[in-house]
Length: 336
Image 1: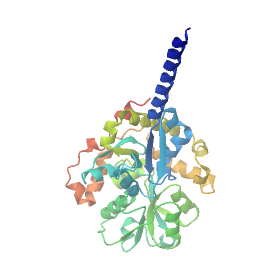
Image 2: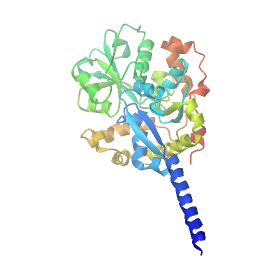
Image 3: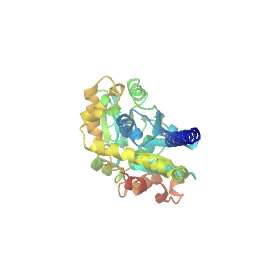
Image 4: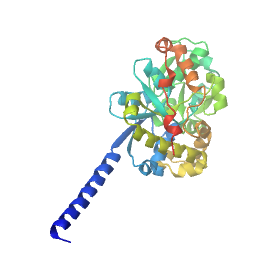
């Protein structure tokens, strides 16, 4: 081979390698997702997908960040700081009423998997939601899904806004501290916090929304909750990336439904256990029925959420919400 031919050959190889490197860089462009409390079991699929390596299997470079309340995560997305949120689907409806379009692209839970916990010190005085009158109720944040659910339950029990107080206390240790310090009489929280409070004798379950049948009695039907939601415009302009995210998350949901709580716990960070793995496994078992098997929106779920929000949110009631723009099943339907 002549010297000139060799130069052309090496140049071609170098160009091909550079093109491959460029393609890899483009394929691994960072996608940042904000999670409304990453250690909460309702948002389990986020960290579990990362730990199982499913994001990398799809060629994705995903960064997970955490905010204690879903409403804070939502604000980060609206500000353009993150591309999507692992949070409650009901924000998609609430935001559309405010002129902003976001949609659930993978539905993780068919029910809230939240629990209304009454402080053990107040258990004798609060035996139903109607007893919330004059009490202080804890939520993760004002405008959060826990706030929505609290207001709806109080409304259905015949209470008016102002006959009870709502206090944002976050989740996890800050929620537990609020109970211990008597800052709240009751509050709504997710596992593993709910199970920890009951196991320690500091709290009692008043309303359990971890089970589909029990949730339907409280909210009138399935209430699709934790999901991956993203701005509709970003989804439309990044369909390839969204499809890869859907592929990864659907694999995780299948993993959840084909493995025991103990096996799932083994894949999670040890600091999520709160120093008690057995209690974490117990909390997992209580919440697993809430997860969808395939990431699809449960039939009738969006209608239930809309009905709940419209009950106490005049802006939602008057907005003529187009539910078809609040979620899509196109990506989970096409998931590998």
